[in-house]
Image (spheres, rainbow, N blue to C red):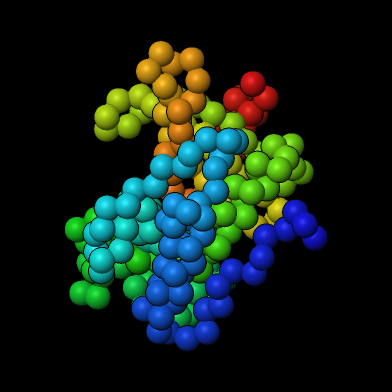
Length: 207
């Protein structure tokens, strides 16, 4: 179906590095490469291109890792998924193999193997904001730098649930959007997050 997402990257064994490299290649070609990067609603998408751990951009690790705070829940995000079997990190922040401690994160193959969905969801939103599987809304959020307005694009086709988040950057006189700054993208797994996003969409999604 034209509104469906493709299969994510195959997780075939416990060689996590190989999967991250495959995910990274896709992220480069579909998002980081400016000559091939999509626009969003006719606006430029800014992506953080700072090189960080393992000589990979910070933006890649935002979609291929899980924050240390997100590991406090009793349930693995990849519960009952093949990633749980093959992940070498098991959401253990202090594991000696965790090379993302400096970023307060843990490499996550469950998130990484879905990076090929990001561009597709952007294209679905560009083609039809009223796509039956999309929930799109904007709202103000508090950040370390203050308040900023963010755009949420959530794809829901159960059991698939995946969200893209952008910061909205306005022009100098605040009369128009200058660009969208890509923040992150990840599968929505926990019930509390689903409920929060449902509530936000009901409050902000029809404005």
